[in-house]
Image (cartoon, rainbow, N blue to C red; front, side, top):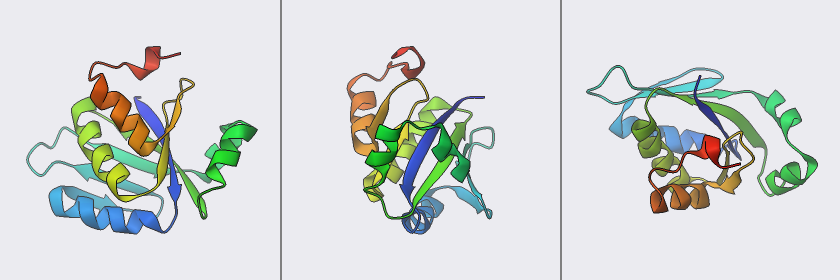
Length: 128
């Protein structure tokens, strides 16, 4: 399973769902959001919220997240890297968030995307 972790303010995701919903097929469930392109059914991005993820972070990371009001922790699972990039760009442009690649890279959402844009072939699984 391919995934990254996103941490953002609880209230902000509602606005992002509205923005994403205008461009893609979106299904919102109690603890997850499922996004697909309107024309390509085999691609998806799934954000599954799991507050227990907080326990996996180091104290210094938790301190960073303390800048957020009611942080939400979620796995971002995806089937297609290019579709993930499209969805993440929308998210980071509209909400204050942090992205953890689960390989020792934790960056603000905008900085994560800047790094990815600067090096499109960046393989975060190798960025140890």
